[in-house]
Structure formats: C-alpha cells, structure tokens
Length: 237
Image (cartoon, rainbow, N blue to C red; front, side, top):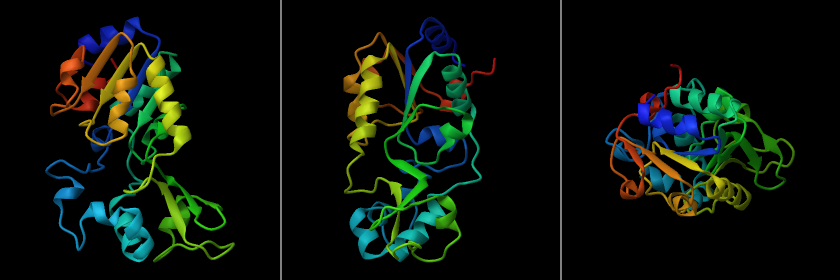
C-alpha cells in the first residue's frame, strides 16, 4: 500500500471509499472510457445506445445479447483493492463502500455495507409483477428472459442511460460521504453524473484520489496517487 495512504488510514476510523470502473479492471472487467474500454469497440449500435432505457424497451433481444456478452463476468475475482476494503471494514475503520460498479465484487470480497449506485447484475426483476430473479435466470435462458409467473420481461436491476439512480441508495451514499473523516476516491475519472457530484458532499479532513489519469478534483485532494487502484490499496503488508 502507498505509504502516505497507509499513514492516513492508520489515523482514521471513519473512512468511506468511493470507486468506479477502475476498481474492477484489475479483476479483468473492462471499463467503458479507456482506449481498450467498451466505448472504443465496434458494435452495430454504440454501447451507450444499447445500454439505454429506450433501447432496452424497443429491442430487448439485442440488449440482452450485448448484456450477456459484455456486462456479466461471473468468473471475475476480487482484487487487492476489494480485499483491502473488506479488511478495513472488518477492522471498523471503513464505514462504507460507494461503488459505480455492478459486478458484486465488493460483496464477494466480504464487504457488508456497499452502496451500489448503478445496481447489480445479481438482481433482476419482472417489469410487471416485480418478482425477483437471480443471475441464473439471465444466463440460463436464451433471448429475452421472461417471468414464470406473469410472462413479463425480466429486467436487470442496473441503472441504464436515461434512468435515475435509486433514491434510497443515493441518499445513503451521500449521508456516509458527508459524515466521513477520510474519503478515498479510486478508479474513477469523476465524469459520470450525478455520482461524480457526491464529492461535493464531503467536508471531512482528508481527501485521497487514486486514478491512473487526472481527474477534475485533483487540485482539491490532500493526496493524489497516480497508480493502479489494486497496487495503491494493497493492504496485505
């Protein structure tokens, strides 16, 4: 772990971590905006169009083909960052994880209090009767998954373009960030709103930014670490 970051963590027992896609790239899950990300790949439709609410409603078959191939990574394993955060929570130093990722890797690592701003691939609901379905119903069916109770379309509990964040999750995330003494932001370019604006709710003592490329908030940070999140957060030593 970065030595300066380690010193900050050692002195605090009220830490919140806010993470983006870069947290999961070390686990083999591609991000969206890097040169190798999904937005740089060629498809019949732009990924941001496929992952919109309008497209899901109009062409759910095309949506699900892309979703199963590019958005679900069940074999991915938590990396050093996920494991460090779970360990810090177990030590009662980390109060919560706020994530933009939908892969469930924080929970796989052992984190208990996770605010999933953009939802999770592990939760799915019938759009008509609201019956819950786990990930197995999505990956073990072909085409558009239907509800066995009412025949409605089953939709992943992920926030698509044109959709709003869950209000309860958003309010919970804002609350823990506003009460934190230390906010560690990692693996995000801070360009996706409204999540990127959550940094404005922080009024604690120390802001740490960990990202391979510059972010709009670098000048406001007490510590900027220009490194991979897994390397910077490795808490095994």
